[in-house]
Length: 151
Image (cartoon, rainbow, N blue to C red; front, side, top):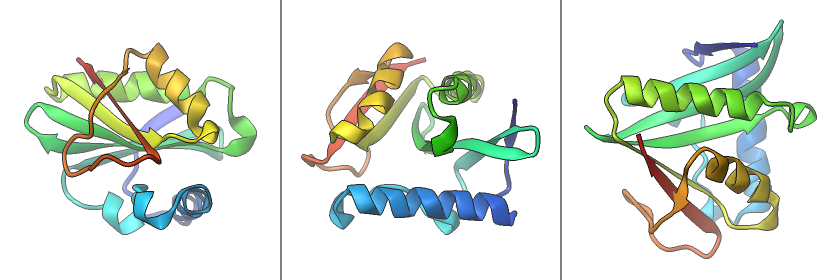
């Protein structure tokens, strides 16, 4: 598996992210959907990684700068047919190491509160994330779960 910074210019990553946004919209009310689209992920302050296994795009994730010491994990996704194969763990480990290398001291995330998101919440717990109050511009939302960890 190969994890690389992606400039988001390829059609395959565009399709992969479109699938992600469409899936999140199908699971979460629009007012509670916080998945970033392609244009939002291209903004300054966001680093985006893609994960390939040979020629196959199998995952992605991003890091959004909130302030000098705090970043947000965004757009974590594994191709559905490859879930539970270690891709998300390897990518999350990589992003945590990169966040630390970039000088961040805190990493936070928002994920869904529904049962569908339980495997994601368990993954984040395994990597030392704990439940917290909304951060940055988020507000309390029954469809959202907020987690954070120090680096």
